[in-house]
Image 1 (cartoon, rainbow, N blue to C red):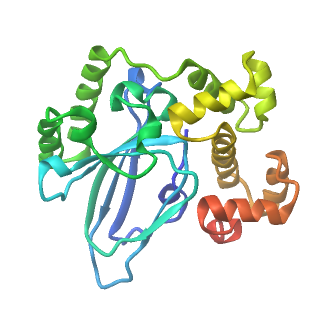
Image 2: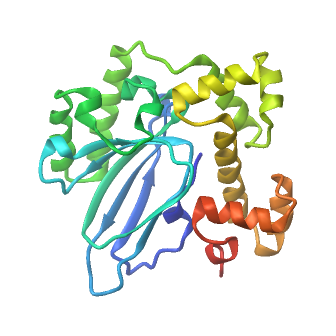
Length: 267
């Protein structure tokens, strides 16, 4: 279950920046990590920094303040490092966070096609999605949006015969099970395939090397353990995840989060 920065960083109860996550229904859990919403209302207070972390997922996002329905839905691909944006304008977003190894039936193309930047949803799904865009924009609350999107996803599953590359699906399950603490050589041995075949499959389907994905899964599991622990245990936890060199650990953490562990988890 991936975690994002707004769920880690403490939000003031009086803040005009609100991020929420919602669990999908049971049949969609193999495909959807969560639904999420972000609301921000501009005030005289300093605009917040919205930080997005690599999480091994592909998102479909609806901009509920888009000028036209056709421009409201878009797909964002995998990330290999963090991104951060100052929220200078009002925001109202609703997203679906998909597991990358099972997203293919919903985006119709390999996830590698979305690595270069956001792609409008009607380019992936065609003009038929504009009706969904309109319904998502005009829905009164997140509960209604979840109802709309789950109906759409179930219909998409029934109609689609597309699946991700089996090597990638199987490989990702090993990465999850090991919490990212596995070498590509060990992964190849478990799967009875050559390292070359696994690299080729990941690159073609995800646009990312298996080592990059391993680093992301390991980082996500590390983050969740750190959230549950006191700062004096951080060096021990880092060592459990293979970060035996403290400078290397801090540099990797900064690359994927944009801040040091001390800055993120300060009391």
